[in-house]
Length: 87
Image (cartoon, rainbow, N blue to C red; front, top):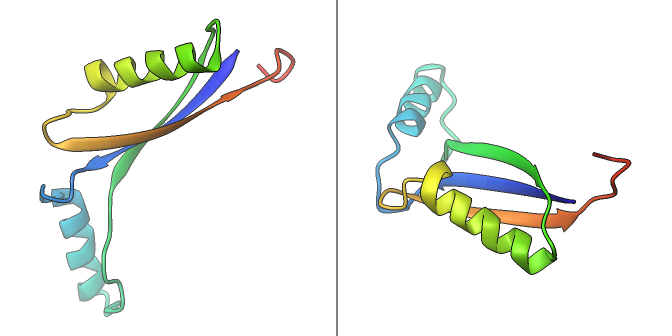
């Protein structure tokens, strides 16, 4: 069994409206030292696969097809083996 941790964020070239709203709120609260802010999504998946490589390929396909809008978002992930007892 494998566990994947997936992080999805807007690409650098895409304006993040939630992050901009938070930055504006911080400025209004007199918090002026925040230089940059990123809002994203986080997913954890547990999956069965024959190998680490197969699990990574499956997670990559899931991200491309469902978890991220590849036109506007980028993603990164880690996949690690877990013991059946932890699952």
